[in-house]
Image (cartoon, rainbow, N blue to C red; front, top):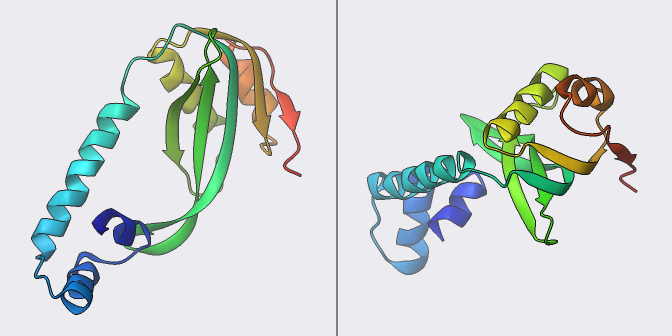
Length: 151
């Protein structure tokens, strides 16, 4: 419940007040902060985990979500999904953006994936990014992606 409310952009104080009002339970702002901080630690560990050496396919796309960074704003979250040689899907990583990501951002994403062991893939697909061919070709590691339409 705490994570759901936090993800919707409520502050720790608002979550504490919600628990008091709805459930009659006293949950301090500090306890809520400890819960969310623990999740952030686990997410960082997951983001740094080693990956498979080879993927049959790599898909990159984005979804726009509400993010609280001082205030609530709509921001893209980019996802890289690999398909293993056994056909298993694996979320390789998630990266929060600001909406104006270009070739430099995407090179950092591909470098992160490569540094965690994903050395190659046989096909790739990305949606929407006009900078895609430049940053992908510059990586020199994967085939140029097929550009998928979002409709």
